[in-house]
Image (cartoon, rainbow, N blue to C red):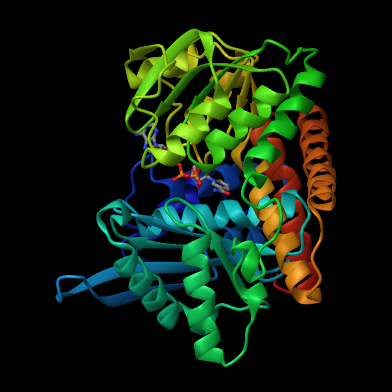
Length: 437
Ligand code: NAD
């Protein structure tokens, strides 16, 4: 190694290159530190390492949107193309009031590792708009989505960069976006955006793909640990797309949902909460679980992670499991449905305590895997049935799970570092072959 990761960090003027915060929990700094650890073990070529620490490209956009009351509001958005050595960049678009460029950078980096880990020929990207979608009408959301594509459309495309839904965006928003892109280009380039509705070139099985992936890797982990999922207690934070589908599919494998939380509150019911009924309720109740009969008793949000259980699925936010609460987690398997739910200082604690962590970019890779299948189907203009999607997804998730487990055993490292070793190695190989270092 030329220099250690930390001395590199000190050598960069962060403000000069637009890094918004130097704090320990800045997600982009976290991704850099995680990469640095992997680079050291892999003895990565120093220039490849340095290049991998930064996004290759990013676009900051300012969007005027006519609101329903006739005023024009100005929104800010981003698109980051982190690394495209293995293929076009791929990653979702978030609508969130607290979105920052560093969040988007971190998520784009994780997409790079995620695509490499499940071995699909794509790089990593991400997008976001700072907005509060819950306070906007459908018309305002449509105009915002179209305005974003009018700016970002110049750098996206089937062979460049392929967005998808993420937090607070959905198939309808993707439909408006692909329509705007079609106006701009004069062609229907369906494969340029995934997570579209079925009637518009979407893929069967995309809706629950991330949750299905979570359930498949939990199943593999349980087999390794000789843990019977029949009757296994499960706790889920976040009951949106990832959390609710993970809970429903794990419940089908026999798990019992005993704790659940979303932004409306946290709940504990040792008798079990009906995962599917709760999902139906949330869909009809503006996305929130509050008021569902059978939730049990209301608890403090931070108490959720301390409920004794076999399977814990954080599927909401970043930085939920830290060195402060990691010593109190009572789960056997921690399946990271969300991106970045665990801070780096919690990883060694969880590892020493024998908690089997399925790291985010392995655990939640089902979504991007089926998005990739969507791109393939769009390219052929031929659509697969649900069975084919489920089977193909299972093959990818199971192979990725075992590649991480083998790497963890080989280097005696925790699973997150092992996942980095597998993924970074693959991206670095592509970079070398392309002559980037
Ligand atoms: P979503 O918007 O559908 O659901 C988010 C859930 O988190 C909601 O239930 C919301 O109420 C809950 N939540 C928000 N703030 C909370 C708080 N303070 N405490 C507890 N719960 C809170 O989002 P999603 O698509 O399910 O994504 C969740 C996570 O999974 C994100 O980190 C996202 O990046 C990641 N992810 C999503 C996908 C996908 O396919 N949707 C794929 C990979 C990773």
